[in-house]
Image 1 (cartoon, rainbow, N blue to C red):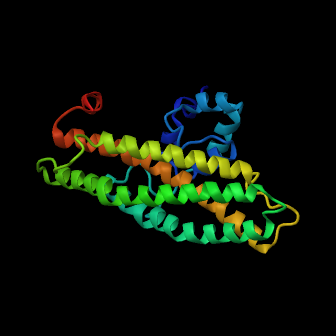
Image 2: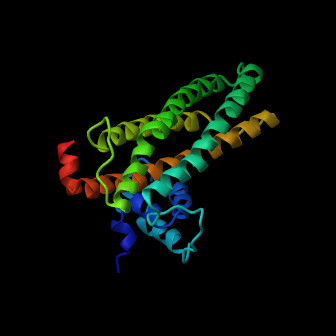
Image 3: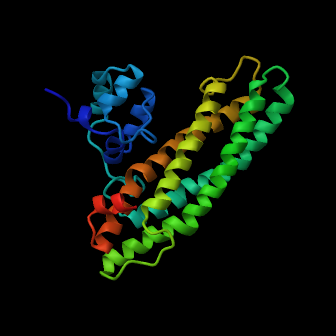
Length: 252
């Protein structure tokens, strides 16, 4: 019997059960940026047996609900607030900490480990891009999504906007997610999956642990937006505007 997971998209699998993100990570399946690919397609792309992934997903067992475990049942406004509270605050707190540690490592170990200088450069690009990205989401896109949710709940007219359709800023955010993910892929490769060399000091270990945690958090962060929040926003706009979502996307 074919498992329903095989035909499900990576994004929907993690949207239904947040714990599945760790399983897909273990098999190098990128559910945040490849969230629209089916499990079967994604496994074929990286040479992983579908049965092995399905077995690991099944082993998770029944999912227990938690007030701080976002999934597809959450409202768009609730999810947007969670992302700001949990993920945006984490990014802002960690960027200067990791940057300072990378600067110290580059000064102390850069002569022997030239990759640290490149890692520092790429992380700087990530920090600059994400700082602007978070601001655009918090000041433009997320308030509009929350306004759509209020309009839907109150049965009122659509909120004013400056971008025609919510799909336009969403496409921009998705492109920026892809760019940040690409930069972090380079950091991960240069750091050999955040493996500390034998001559690495305590700061080396701490910094690479911070980078690994940042990598995991950003994957979940992007997943929540690309695979859950943004589709909900498109659907909300369609309801408030009284237009089927497929027509809204085609017209944008």
